[in-house]
Image 1 (spheres, helix red, strand yellow):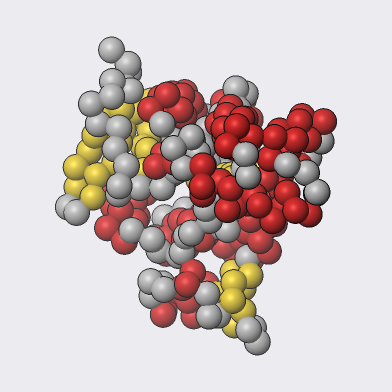
Image 2 (spheres, one colour):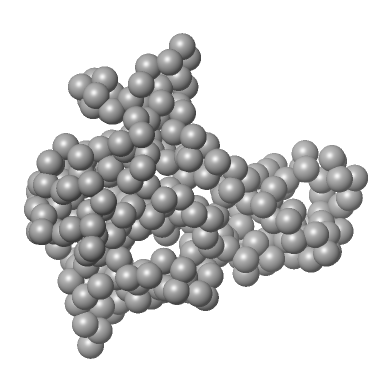
Length: 270
């Protein structure tokens, strides 16, 4: 495969969604080679194909995005969310709901986990919670909405058995998320580099953006964090993955340290 074509395609991907393949062209080549064979075109021609067939971006995004996730991921952070953060919003009502945005929800395990944790607290009446779950990959969003997961899937590697029995329906080969949990989540297709992201999401109280920034360079991270800052209400909380940090980046976020985890709170930018 021609290197120039790969470089050009990597630039297009970077501009479109911020994922940086410039230092890992071999990985990009592996991910798209079969698709190029199907289309019968070269990598260089594929760049032009994306311009005249914009729907092809959906297919490309499916090929290049990583959708590794599972229920109850990063237990210490989730305990902090459930036991410390949620009680601060216990007075929310259907007229003033607690709004949470999972900004890269993949196949849905994260937003459903949050919904389960919220339900377990017993702090909120029906309609007092809005969980917006977004992803750029339309295919994984379709799976998310179904709420169906194979029983042998790694999705259940850390879920407590009592949570599985209580919040899922056991089918022949799959577990199905109960409607009481599914109804709390609104799935949407969204690009984190979308300039209209604030208008599309609206103001939220809490943002989860876990294990996403690791695929971006500093320029894109600054842009994404700026968008998350603008969407969050003052005093709202941002949860990143345990391998990600924005401490010391002058983002307007205060770092909060808790036992075995840390997260961020929105203040006013200096």
